Each structure stands twice: as C-alpha cells, then as structure tokens.
Length: 312
Image 1 (cartoon, one colour):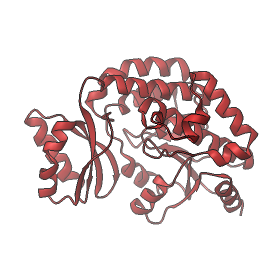
Image 2 (cartoon, one colour):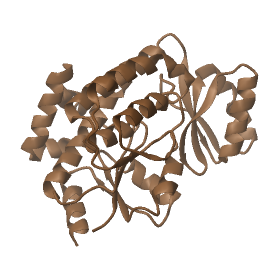
Image 3 (spheres, helix red, strand yellow):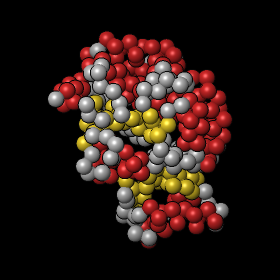
C-alpha cells in the first residue's frame, strides 16, 4: 500500500468556477454546497461560480477554498474507501482543510470556522495599511536579515511564507514593505512584489485574532484524528485537539514553513495528493523535492486518474 500525504493549498489558489465540475456531476457535491450555504448564510454557488468581488475577500475566500477541497476529498474517499492517509499537510489555510480531512472537525463546522477566521483576520487589519510582499531569487537568510534590521529601525515586517528556495513571502505594514523593495533588490532579489492583499498573514499584526480563534476551535475540534497533521509552525506531526488548537492559534502570527515541511516528510511518503483547485502545491513540491510525486484532484477527470493510479 502506498504511503500518501494528503495536502491542501491556501489562499491564492482560488478561482472563479473552481469545483463546478464536481457540482455539475455529483449529488454529494451539490448537497455539501447547500449545507455550507445554509450554515453561514452565503450562496456558495454564486460566490464561487459567478464573477464577484467577495471571492477575493478573506472572510469568503477561506470557506470557499475549504469547501471545494472538502468536496474533492469526500469524492476521493467515496471512490477509494480503502486508501488511508499516511499524514495530512496544508499550506496556511490549507492546514484547516487538513484538520478537517483528518476527521478532527466536521466539514460544515470547518466552513464556519474559517469564515470566522477570515473575518477576524480582516478585523485585525481593518484600521491599518497591512500587506504582503513576495521576494524572489534571494536566500532565506538574506531576507530574514533585512527583516530583522528593519525591525531594529522600528519597521513592522516579518517572514511569513517559506514556499521554496528563492521564494519567501514577507508580511507587515504596507508602507514598511514598500520602503524595503529596493533593499531586497540591492541584496540580489530578482523581484520584490507587493501582493494585492489587505491582510498581513502569519505575523504579529494578527495577534488580536488569536484568542477569538482559539475559543472557536475549542468548541469545534475533537480528538478523532485518522492520521497526524504536519504543523506549519513546527514542521512536526501532531494528532490531538490540544496541539491543534495551540498550533493553529500560533499559526496566525508565525510563518508557514511549507518548504521545510515537505523536506521533513519526503522520506516518509511515496507520493502526495493535492485536493482542490489548481496545482499550487504540486508545482512547489516539484521544486522543493524533485523526486516527490504529487498528483492533484480538481475535477472528475483528475479524480478518476488518481483513483486509477493508486489502485495499480
């Protein structure tokens, strides 16, 4: 039996029309969309399948991504009931999908949880000009030093997402990030690009969201883990409610160590399956550990291909 990591992307993987093939061809998918819509009072069919401004707003982006990922995972489990995960892993928001897939939270509770998480993140940044910047072509140590030196000068900037070698996203006050653009380039960065975001994820600016998120998780998460989840914060596995609540509370203000997590699990799994829209993590994985096979399930055709591949 293959050892499989079930993996889930985060914000930025969304697109209008994602999951529509599942919706059009599966009664289960339609039922999950309807239940999620009732739970938080959002018409997910319109939100995801029609052009609108809300899909780009964190409070709506997060539940939309998670819902499509959970539909993909549910249909996979229905098609391959004997396949068990060796471990679960998500990137940022995707860690909540991993928690859900592990069985530690019901998907409908998870939809509400990440909707509220998104609102809390937006609220924390509502009165400040926060943002994120992608740094390309510079090693981690150089980016970290620039951030540390800037902090010493009173600026608010922090490493936020370790995606792959030569790609690190930093977060903080938008003006402070903009002031460092040339500094990053002078240090050798090929690009220092301000992202179109109004929230600064995985940094101290989100500290006000920690206690409310912790309270929500305490009421929704249980101790029924099918397999361990790899923490974005520590890169180590966990499989208890106490750990999940503490680590996902910390994840709000600490960087996502995705690159380090993939390196850590590479010897423990034979392959990874990415669930939900796009191939964001499949692309990263190929550049982090070239030997790691990653497949994706984003529609009915890719579901059938994965089911056939892992049954051979």
